[in-house]
Length: 205
Image (cartoon, rainbow, N blue to C red; front, top):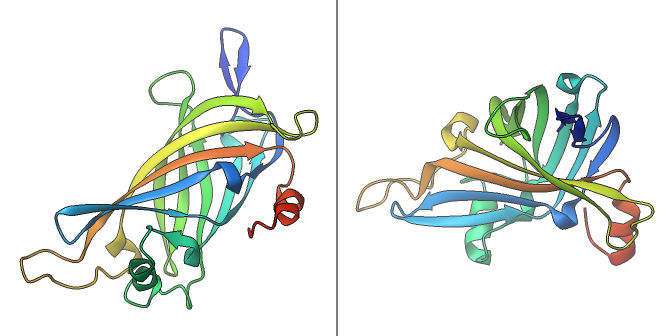
């Protein structure tokens, strides 16, 4: 998440502190389920700080996601995924990501990769996010006070790398939950802390 220069125009947020906007961000995961199916879910509660440096490669991102905010649309399944069989949210209430480096590369002038450490289930592993700056716009409620930028990012992780269970074997072969999980992020960041507005509308962060 850093400014990109193209034909004299600057794209992306300028130097300073930016905040994750959880109301307009989607943290999506997709996993194999019962060997042949695919289940999509989201995490609905997250906080994040993005510090954009004068030197873009030195910018930092730190995000904390509330593990119990997992939602696949089926409460019984969600409770199982939150249990000690999988995420064990009572012992490991947060998922965290802390960036370690940013490189301007990829397809198109607005693409970049972000390296970082992802912590799930109390285990930290390095990952790489393939990122794209999507655009910018003022806030629709307070356009004179708040400004935002939009990003998309994707990666894949292996649950076994983080010590997350797979639900055990199935009678017809395979495991209850596949090891490979696709992560798709659609993120908005803004130049003001969203906490006051979230409290005003009763949204838990």
